[in-house]
Amino acid sequence: MLESTLPRRLRRAFYDLRMEGSGAGREAAAIGAGVFIGCSPFYGFHFLLCWAVGSVFALNRLQMYLAANISNPLVSPVLILSEIQAGAWIRRGALHPLTIGTIRTADLGAFGLDLLVGAAVVGAALGAIAASGTYLTLRTSSNDPVFASLVRKASDRYVGTSITAWEFARGKLRGDPVYRQTLCGGVLPSGRTLVDVGCGQGLMLALLAEARRAFAGRAWPADSQGPPQFTRMVGVEHRPRVAQLASHALAGEADIVQADALAISSEPCSGVLLFDVLHMMPAAQQEKLITAMGAALEPGGVMLVREADASGGWRFTLVRVGNRLKALVCGAWQQPFHFRTRTEWIDCFGRLGFDAQVCPDGEDTPFANVLFRVTRRLPVEKGTGVFFRNS
Image (tube, rainbow, N blue to C red):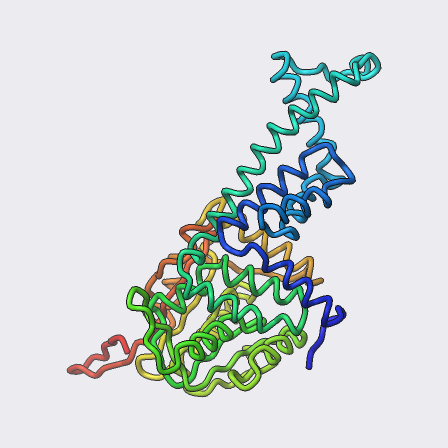
């Protein structure tokens, strides 16, 4: 069994702290309160304040303290200056001159009052912004208790591996709309075999496995699209450590293959997932993988491809920055990327003999992601010419 470096009891205690005060409203309140406390000038007491406030109002104390670290050494100088100036403006209608003379002749009492008043105002403003952003991010899953329960169960599969893997699973499944769309959006039909290429920790497979387990022999809620069901699920991941995480979380429910996607020979399958994979390959390799996986699709099979839209303006810039930062953190600082625009992707699929339908994904996020539902064209003889129709 794969274990983290943290003792089991410590992981359990961390899990309990992390899960207290769950729900979009409570988590938003915890983040907002933590930012407000972090902006206060009571340095050295932020932890105690977070613990006390969280205990009284039943908020997540760990989230509060993490949010309170807005007053870290990099941000504190700017934060303190902003609070002093804000307090001066509120109390006297004028800012402090930024000169050495002002500092030498400063009335410490006046500066202290300016700091207290400004900290309350700046802290309240930043806390409200942080709380609003948190609530908007979490409200969709919170409004759907069925999906929220499946996300929690799928994430909990990683508690026994490492806290980092569990935190990543929890945040990704709740915050990335592609998982909800794939599970509940009716874009992926049921079938025999599903192949998830570049499966990572196996998050989508874990979510599908939990849905199958939770609703075996039971009806899916009438107001939701039922999840796809597969006889067999296969995940392909080339990173050994990540593939091991997936294998542990999905033992007995999915086969995890540790290999390069371009080096495998796929069996016939009903569904293929390619989430955020193709842009990490040169153009020729992208098309080679699309062709190979598309050829493995059975009649009526569907390939879901999620990629960034290079014509997405500032939203695409955020995707590029995020990918570059991830590459740096993982030690792959020379990782090349090849992005395409939405139109270029559709043209690429068509040139390779596929039809592509754009599905809703990412409209409520700051990222320029687009989800394609790709189906294979089958040649049909008609007269003396060769025509194509959808499978």
